[in-house]
Length: 109
Length: 113
Image (cartoon, rainbow over all chains, first blue to last red; front, side, top):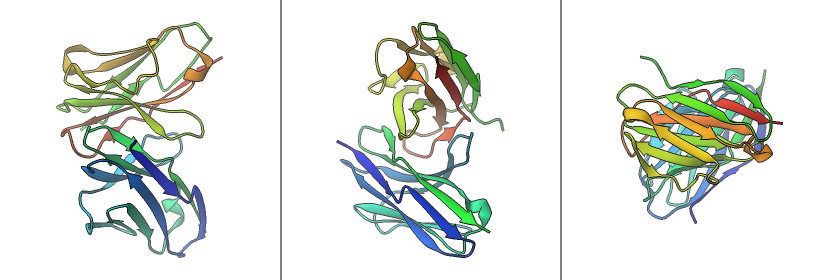
């Protein structure tokens, strides 16, 4: 069965303290891996798509990487406005997109 | 360009009543998805439309849930009769391509008392 596991569930960092969020996946035939950001009371907002192992994408203080079994979302020198829940999702051969539970990130000023 | 819009944003109903949620996707997006997030759980897939056809409805919990997409434009999700465990946030998303990022609405929060 296709599965997406994110860790940690929650993470508190000081402003400027870099860290990484993990997304492990088990799917048959990965067609794409996605990272989303979700703010309270809002829908998920798309950040990145990764299609194959070794691929990397960057946007401001965020960088996403992909291997054959997991993806990392690296956050460099975060600011309080980066506080949100970060969701990982995968699209497998059946085209269904399944989500992990997310990592709640809190950046302290 | 307007994003995905959902209505209502919040609905409170009693067990046994009926609720209909509506989603207007981004214009031109043939793919429309419904997802649900129950407290403490991950966002779970319910179903996927391509235009007006149901491509995959494997995530629909039971026959109390009925989704339609009239003319390949907006979609409705009806819950009848509602049960306590149906409470959660129902998200609609649309996409231009079959493989690619989804654009989400802000969700419809359903509370069944």
